[in-house]
Length: 241
Image (cartoon, rainbow, N blue to C red; front, side, top):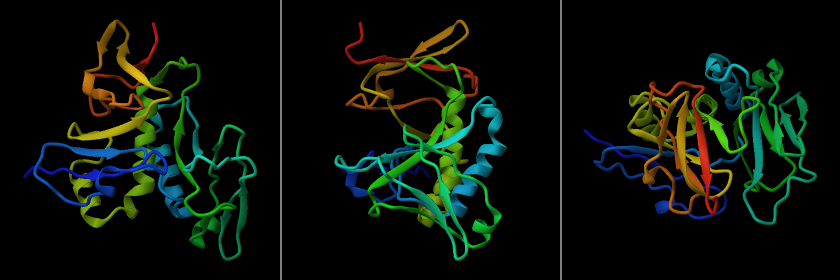
């Protein structure tokens, strides 16, 4: 049987196809939009992401794991935002950098208390995503292993909160990060005209369908083992000569 699963993961407070359509239809691929940036999870869920980063660190061995906080509404700003791990007896402040990134610390007491992650802002005002960057990668590129590792972290954090049918379908396919039938949509740094994959002397221009219609999203071959983790996704920005 062929399945599709569209997890409508919105970029911000915009619209999503069929508003998170749950229908299962007979088609060829599963599309997982990595950009939904859901409301903050429990501390336990974030620790699952930390565990995934540690276990898959070989994908990007020179990187450190941070998370990126960004507004989900046009009038929201990270200025003055605070993040706190809050349990029955535990309260731990999480420093937020000026660029909107933060590192989630490990704390056994918070884990034992099933602590929550609390922002001093209205629920739904901000979203998050993993942020993995190997040093010295050019500004117009992403390292493929970094993107693969971000995917593994996100899947570890999100999987338990997915509806049973969605979680089962993606798990059956081997997870969203290593199966050709699963397309994980990435957020472009700015509007793209296209991109090319580069590994040593091998260079392949991405097919037209790999970049979204507005140029702000793209899909890379996370599953394709012929592309090493050190391969670069080199962007061609819209309007670039």
